[in-house]
Image (cartoon, rainbow over all chains, first blue to last red; front, side, top):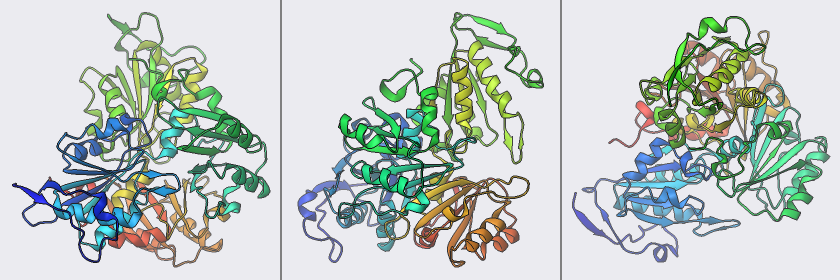
Length: 288
Length: 288
């Protein structure tokens, strides 16, 4: 395969303004006129060791990696030095690049490169907007595959000592996104305020007071256990435990910051018994 | 560390009848009188490449591995030949070993071995009864850690081309276990039959007709898309798509067998556009 210069000009009708300034002219291996392929890959919840073997293989063979802000530097370092890395990082309430431009960038890179890895925090198909990226690739005839990752919910639950289901306490678990629209959470409250269910809220920190209020208003006992986990699965993980009544004040006092995950349900009470004794990195109970 | 003979007799008060016949006298490295450690490790949904790097590290260094029936042979083969492997496999409606005996075995092995890996299909804390095993270890003072795995829901959704959430179609997803109790599913039907939600049912094949009936009876339109995935993420994956009205008859005609996963919701309609074109192994669109 020859090295060819590729200017990455946006194709007509695909890319909106601002795109060209984000992607400098770069050199990528061409593919003899055939389109390349894109892998939408879940990078897991934070701990680099929670990457899958398949993700590792794709990263090691990538020509270009398009990644979110929260993907760990240790994971990006797994790619060979020659690999083009593009940060399209998402900060809270702000996408460094609008989703439409990320989609267009993936299409463009696939046409210029052999192997593009779109590396996303958590799992691409759980609150990752991976579905929209997949639709864009399919619409442009770009071959792609989706590689699941450990989602924040199960990664953080395991490391925080909170089983998401348990025969005695929770026969189901529900994942919702808690980001605000016009300052409010708009959720299906009657479905969320159920007994014998574990509720996991992604991106819900700002709305936590409203979340707890609505759950109680829709019938969940105020004494129901609840936790917020900050920077779950990383060495800086912090876990705050309370009830739906007490948690908002505790979180305010502790000045938690995103990324966080909220877990509501009786299973949170198991944490005292099940949390690893070592509070440190990777929630590791097994020292090597 | 010396090699010492360990008879693995059950400790008083922990192990019930039948245990000794399952575990032959074996040789394990002792640990100078200190108890060993147990890692409850998720092996993922089927495809061996969906193992995490952390799980691989623990498997490679294990002294004993206690695994479920569905853990792929390729994953067990990652352990060095010297490693003791114990299959406590779970068949449908039948545990080869009752859960209490598995718990006791883990305690016993940890006292005899350095590093015990309890290798479970999917994720230990999502319908894996990992919480019960963790409680047993904690109650006996055995140090342990929990390593999350790709759960069937996100692993299979990715490989079957079905995003579990999508801004336009599903703002939440719910996981329930659909196994029968006295021939019936007992679930919180009003919480399950919701619009704009993806419902994922583990172990629900036998109850599928009742599931679909109850969902419609509780208000879900009969035209709602639904899929059953058999042996998801493996080379023998089969996906059957229909609606909650049509799916039971289609599944009966196709004689699907466990393990299966049921996905209900509008997102199933995205599959036509998003499923990988290659129907084969690993749902791999990227050929190497």
